Image (cartoon, rainbow, N blue to C red; front, top):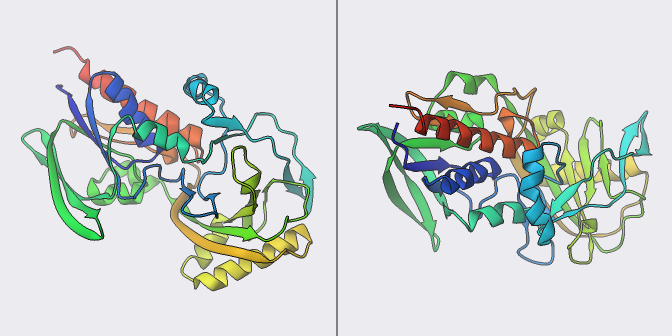
Length: 333
């Protein structure tokens, strides 16, 4: 199969990794992402002094290929270890966690991981794909893009292969595949809080088995962050599902109250609070597929949901999709 031009729908970490590998192997890649900034759930807020990583909070590196990818980023200061104090819950008590692997973050934001890749690719942000069409053995993509507050339609064609780096439910709207229905993603309500004073607890990150909250993190304790006292709260998948459609103020208040109860403290005054709702956040029992590839249709699907709900899983899935496309390209005849 001639594969010289590939479109990737979705500029999350898996799509960016896939595009980077294909580009290095001589394939022209164009990435379309609906967001203002690429990265997907490697998301950060930095529009003012209230700076947060509100998607993925940190990552570990077990696979040799992921560690090799990270080495130059560590050397140039774009990735660093988060040497905070971490805890888990045991019988309702907070217990210091004995780390078996270093925890890393992007510097100065988690989003730095995505930005480093996106700057080396033709990554078109604010471009929402609404339809894909197969024409004369190539693909045509149609959609709209935002520019200075106005929406414009566009089309782009001539792609021999299309990769969907999207949650399965969103990917299925554009190009159905039977495996997509086998994976369900649960939502997450993420609350960003700035306090006027330090929250007086001994830990910087707490993983919980609580019915309401799954994660509490002192975001401002990460390396390379500005001064302040900033926390990120992630609602548990089940609780987030139940409360997802509720009013934002109700969700905020319930999460703040639970934060204080879990830590058994009176929280300092809050100077900033913002809620972000991730509709497709955590896969339930993610399969170990690596990716999904349909050779006859010339499409692939990738994302952390194909591997694990982790940044490393997204990396490996994007790598897997790129490897499969390169195998097809290099088939004899």
